[in-house]
Image 1 (cartoon, rainbow, N blue to C red):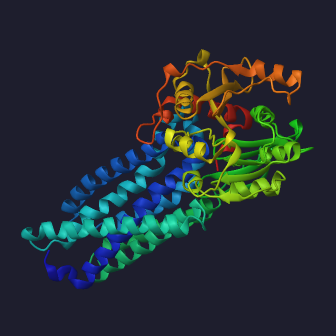
Image 2 (tube, rainbow, N blue to C red):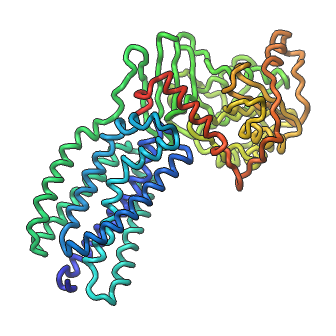
Length: 517
């Protein structure tokens, strides 16, 4: 092959090709979490699986693409891109079947196998583009370095642009399925353009027909892929009132009329539950938090980090007249709380990331409720000494912090539970721990911390309330844990068993079908 073979137009076309396929790689990788998260969550294991599968696919693509380029000489690039397009379009169509098939493998293996089956094929073909483009663009042996460097630079630049466009513009406005299908259509268009070029400029007739046929197959998958959304409604048992995809998860409002229950879920996490009939919260740990203002009378201002369905703000206002600021990262959750759970803000209603927003809040608060629980993954960055110190700085002199944490008890020696206790104790002079459901091994644990000793025998609590609180008071051994910091925080690893257990509870309750988009 000589430089005249592809010419300047062909070289520009090659750069456009690797730019677009580089963007496609990052789009598929990033959207992979949105396809898997409703079933397996967004834990470190899901991200590790996706990154590993991407690296495996690219390594395979580089090797196979290089061998194919040497064998085929000048033909095949259009076919490679067309295959990548069809396989990309097929991802939304195949997601439900793959996730349900891998359910029995558990969190880690299930997430990895799902990522392998769903994303390895398309990413492998996208990885093959680079070596093929290098072969086409290389004129002389001494020009290999320049050609390969230019090709991979354009591919990387495409990845950067694809990442920024997806995260900053596309994803807040368009669903993951629609983006994947749109990317597949763009790749099909690129494949057709390459096929025309191969025929008209390189005189390769055999490259056009297969590409056209694959394009038609891809277009035939479009209606199925776009319409591959959630179709299972739970039959007569459950009713889905609302579904909305956000930057942080797939937010649903689900009703179970037979048990008078309405749920608010984000991916595989239940973040709110209430009676359909009267709107009263069904989350037991909130009964403990609802009594805390009695331990420090005359509270006037509170902050909730992790608003959820917003029940605690209503309890604090109706029972104690406390004005409550709420902080919620997900706008879809904030809207669902207002539209389906009757949440009415009594103070500021802030939507944004907690670590950023906390730095801009103005205290003091008499009560801070830290309730950023997720079922599949831990908000580890919100459970560190640094975060708790920031919250401590927002408390009034007699203020109280209440932190909700889900774990196994293991006689108070669970490493994750002990680590949270040790971290709380590093920041606060005094703390107590309570359990939501006495006698249950898997539970909500509420850490109550302050700058002073906390007296449960408060005059503002009845004898029955004091006895009820004492029954739920537990001992947690901090010596079995470690202090969690921004630098070292293995909490998600320590909570693997919890994530498995929590997901299984939801699968048993709702059924695996209901957790798949």
